[in-house]
Amino acid sequence: MSALGYDYCFACGDKNPHGLHLKFTRDGDGVTGVFQTEEHHIGWPSVQHGGITSCLLDEASAYVPLNLGLVTVTAELNISFKAPIRVGERVRIEARPSKVTSRLLLVDARIEGESGELKATSKAKMIVLSKEQQEQLGIEVSS
Image (cartoon, rainbow, N blue to C red; front, side):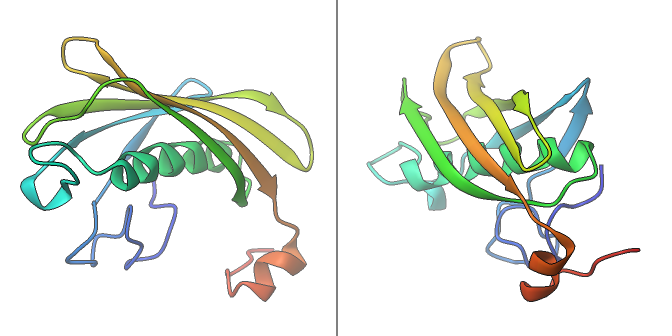
């Protein structure tokens, strides 16, 4: 699956030396990806910062509309943190649409540890951008 953002996107950009370098693959109408927490991702000692967890869920949610050929922005992201993600831990991220309209997508996402332990869940409201809105944000619009 092609990168959602640009080369320097913090979440998925290949050229951002400080980024997360996330990659997602299509899984039916959703996406899946993996991430391994490193020491520079911590908040509390040996525990991934909640902002990084939020970023993982938000980025997975943004890739769902990409599957549908839509460009969206996140209007709301509601997260439930279930269990800590530890340094060195590899997690699986998945996201799926729960509602799709011409202007709105609702996306459910989750993060699980390798053992299947639920780490975090989210519900995102993604707003579909018109071509004019995309142009205002500097997003190249293909005709």
